Amino acid sequence: MARSNLLRLDLALQGGGSHGAFTWGVLDRLLEDESLEIAGISGTSAGAMNAVALAAGLMQGGRQGARETLQRFWGRVGELSPFGAVPTAPLAWLDAGNPWLAPLRDMTQWLGTQVSPYQLNPLNLNPLRRILLDTVDFDRVRGCDKTRLFIAATRVRTGELRVFDQHELSADVVLASACLPLLFQAVEIEGEAYWDGGYAGNPSLLPLVLDSPADDLLVVQINPRERAELPRQAGDILDRINEVTFNASLLRELRSIGTLKELLAAEGWAARQLRNPVFRRLATLRLHRVDGGQWLADLGATSKTRTDPAFLDRLFRQGREAAEAWLDQHRGDLGVRSTLDIAPTMLAAATADASHQRPNGASSATGESGAPA
Image 1 (cartoon, rainbow, N blue to C red):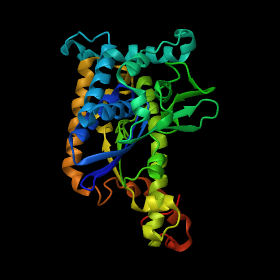
Image 2: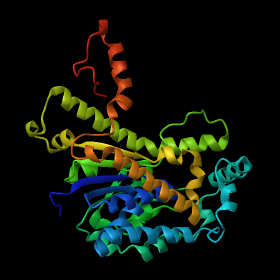
Image 3: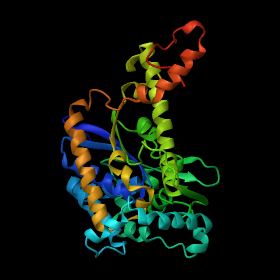
């Protein structure tokens, strides 16, 4: 599948409702670059929708076919909006920063916690099903030999992650991955009920580590990681809870990968010395990130349900711009080194805690770079 002159890259695509249009822009720019091969994709929720649209398009018309299928999918999403025919300027009042919207937003969020989708939507209507069936050929997705796909969903019964492999993918699987439980009824697959994959894996990195030949993994993260100000209004607090919840599983996986890579480096083990195939992969794995959170932070979580075409187009253009900036800065690092420095940001606290617990300031067995969590 791969040619020697291509840089193989895995993609981990977060979910985030309509903010997934930012990821669409990132993918559009990456597909435009013929020096890159997308070897595998792990996607959740909107990331899952982007993943299957890309794979179906690749099989139908190569890179250009993938770009066209993604555009067609998001164009149909834009048609869902009641504001689709409204010019851009009058829609400025929808922005999260508009103080007049705060009471309405808080009331809407409160109402969403009081009425379940089984009461509000007893027929279980979901317009995304029709869009997926109209724009994505799932036979092509399951038969795609140009990339590998992994889609995450959360088992309602146990709270555990399930990663669906490529041959299992269908519209139901993608809808399960995107099933927010206060908006939609749980999606049943083979007798098991599923909710949004973001609760357990947003997205899951392990399938790419275990089953993809690429050593470079790019995370497209669209849920803001940091907030400078303490949220004090009810809507802002709920927004931050949403962001923390849907980043938690990704941060756990990155922390685990970072810890293991530090241990391997501290012991001086080269990949060729490791018998365990997972450790061999981790030793050579290079991590990267396009951080969409810094572009999307001002929008607020409630904007994830906004689908007017002007808004989606704005996110698409921001995604392309972010990918362009990342390629300009880090293209030369692909195949060479990681550009996502996990250890200082995620393991420094664990290292400091461990050093405080050791008597007389004794040094850690793993060195100053970090300690196993």
